[in-house]
Figure 1 (tube, rainbow, N blue to C red):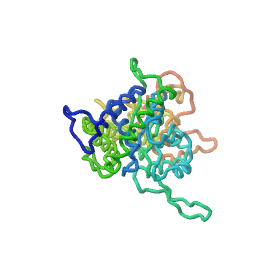
Figure 2: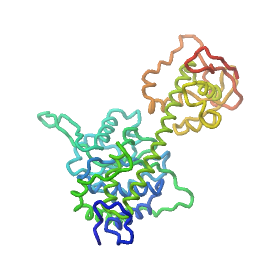
Figure 3: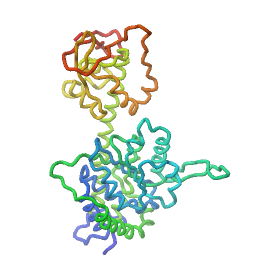
Figure 4: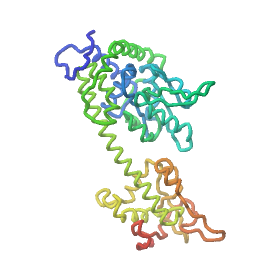
Length: 419
């Protein structure tokens, strides 16, 4: 077959597709047979990412592939299964120590596949998780070694970190990793969306054949790829992350040059929108923490009172959220991704209301606003004293009661409302 071009950016017209175009088309179709990805652009990106692993030694940046899902059963592990059969020298790990990875990455690095990243980067997994996070961040760019004392003479020794990596987990990955990633936000398949059953014993040979053809096509083009500086539709770190994928597309030429840049723009814009929404949700967590703190950290706050305080903060975005400002429905939607929801709660005098229980926020504060947890100074009641705020209660059903300041959180002398 005719070799793919080294820098073509056109659509190919009526010319016979080159080897690279045919091979990438076939790889894209085969990946799409086994997994349902979030979009056509995501399928294009995964195809190019797989191909890029075969020229890692020619690249200046090693993009991460972040495979995230809100719940289990969204296909993220199946994505890793397909990648394992098609990428260059896969190294699959769930709980391998950073020391092992340091000693595995060499001048010709493997491709790391990290599953169950949500357990690795949880607040309870400090220590090694921070080392691994640092390794994954440093390894995005060439010439960022990790120094360790090594050997019987205890000499400072640099360990290479540069390697492409796919990282899969439930929930969001650390921002420093997603910022260096092509991000796939997986969802459960819709009714009617079908995929072929994946069994490595019969899917493996088909995928491995594609892997070998990728290596044979790209091997002679490494020196060409190392010299390429393709025009990019994005800037800064997004350009660093997507450049290897665009290089692959331009090596193939034909429609892939346009298709890669279209995927780049669409997916980076989507992530920018996600970042904005995530920032809003993080702001909400901080503001809710402040409301609890101003109320002397009661066990629970009535939903309506919490909303009232939030929307009266003139410096916050909540009065303008939605068509008429934040309401209980909006609050529930914004907190749902953190696993936080209101419950029926019995306050003082036996009266009941829909409320948010403070301890349901602790995990989200620890993950997304750790500085709040470190400085949290919930006062302990004196022996024999009556605790401030609502008394301990159980989830119940019923009507509202209780009181809470509803002025701006910064104004402790604001008006009070009794439900």
